[in-house]
Amino acid sequence: MRPFNSHTLAGHAAMLFANIIWGFMAPVSKYVMSFDSVSSFAVTGFRIGGACILFWTASLFFKSEHVERRDKIRLLFASLLAVVFNQGLFVTGVSLTSPVDASVITTFLPVITMIISALILKEPVSFLKIAGIVLGISGALILVCGAASGTGESSLAGNLCCIVAQFSFAFYVVIFKDLVAKYSPVTIMKWMFLWASIIFVPIFAKDMMSVDYQSLPSSVYWGIAQVVVGGTFICYFLIPVGQHRLRPTVMVMYNYVQPVVATAAAIAVGMDTFSIYKLVAALLIFAGVFVVTQSRAKSDVNLSK
Image (tube, rainbow, N blue to C red; front, side, top):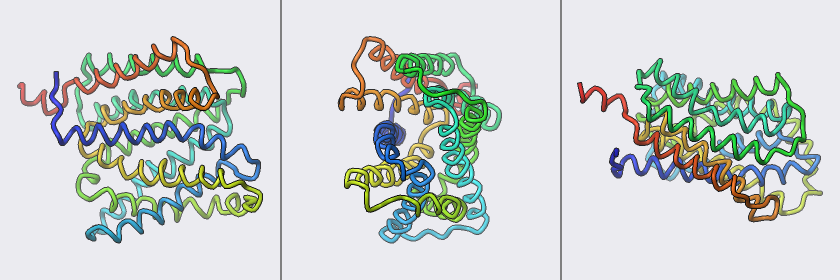
């Protein structure tokens, strides 16, 4: 069994906490967008613009770091992969296809990351890693397919958008691991969201201005605040912590926690009911995460030679 030291434990805690928050975002976002004037594009604009303001404000309370011009350019490309393409394509995909299709596609992020890590970082594709990913996918598919209501229509274009969004984030996690280790999470994210805001917010400005703010109840404002502060600012603050301390394949395995949390939240508020298949799915998902954390890293293989 691979030991957990304080360095890796912080990474596990960061990714677990981030994915728990993202799990709660599903019912909250659904409620916010149930009001006709609040589109998914408006919510995305709030997320990116709001997070940009929060990260630059937070940076005032941390020691200032000099970012090399070359790294600022790299952060632009990191922003394109992790924020612009990932969030933009996924939101577009969800608007075109069924929620069930989109949920199933997100469960393949660990598989994509494992393949990219093997090709670029030469990470070993061990039996434990494959077994853990299979367990995680099995649990996620049981949870998603069991909750499918049959509503909504599949769309090839929408599914392709969701798939490309997963590839985009997987490439970010693998390619920019060294850059994330060079600067603090606040520095990384303030520049990434600044680039994303410059690119994204003007595109969604029309949707953001068309919201009928006066007719919205206070609960919607609280929901938007949760999406911006919790689901974006806090979670994207935690991503570099996990990215710096964990292997990419271990980091993205926590993606499977989201459907478990979303289902638990739906049950708690009466939107869903508990059943044995949901318990089995949750156990499979957490078993998959544990098995992948026990797999051998590239450094372990090198030491054994």
